Length: 414
Image 1 (cartoon, rainbow, N blue to C red):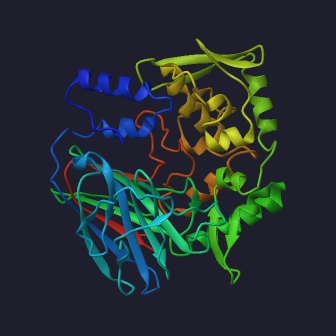
Image 2 (cartoon, rainbow, N blue to C red; image 1 turned 90 degrees about the horizontal axis):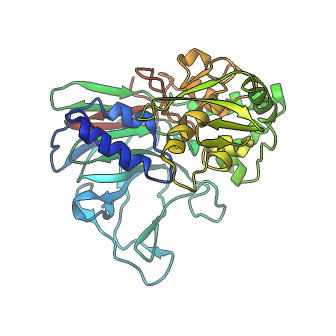
Image 3 (spheres, helix red, strand yellow; image 1 turned 90 degrees about the vertical axis):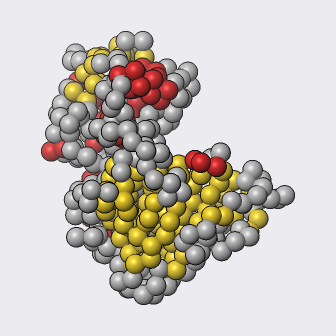
């Protein structure tokens, strides 16, 4: 994640240049939100409280990431919740971990406090009524649990994760449904001054609520939303895959978005779409010309349903590394997922009331947001896109002086 930026305009410009030079489009709203935080030096370690809000006494947590202060080495927290495990490169693929990384959370209602160093690209994994299997490939590279690989040893287990980066400037954490909906999770961040931020997440029955709504949507429009539901051996809901991951497992939405795309192309053949890049490019406008959506030097062909759900393929790819294209892609992809392009000629759309109002939309995302008690949580890759000073959709907490991050596993905090 990017560092918070506020002190110097020069630092902001340097960060934007660094971000926009990457071939993968930057996550714009995160960058904007973090810019609101003052630059300060955090402590060397951080406490994380893991709260077992499930009904099980057999819940295990795992924390993985890159150790920023140790040359970004692969980091795994040991089972004691304090000691660092830095795996060495194995001689073969699929090697077992040499240290126990399963952190027991105790009985329902218990809180387990763990301590971590500065970490980038970190995840807190948790599994109910079982332990997760992590493997190592040469590098070392961590082989993490998968919901799309049927040969993965964790495929039939009840697990989930949340994400964070904690560096010398700030802690940033978020819940995520980009891959799937599983175990309910909430976050609370308390800073050194005692102020708190929260993401409440879903209630305990959130997964069942999502699955029921997916079934209802399939009955309504005939699209394969219900095929995203994964059951366990008893017939209970195990998880709900995102449409992007559903396509990986064979649940293809085919031409689902085509009618909407056609209507967008028709509208902007005679009108202009304004894209606020929220970067040095300012606002750029686009129109349809020769069946391409043209924004200055960048052209976009019609996206397929798979392109829209992935936000990174077809017209949303950027093989040339164009900085302008990097700025447009997140906002255009978000507008297609939220189906706002026919109700607002500006993107990001100015009001969340305009999201998901078309019959053809990312109903998985709509349903997920409705199931969260505060309506927040990443549900597609660019769900952090928001208008300037707009409402957060991504379900994030961040602060430059964190005291403790509390993670509620199995139901929201309030």
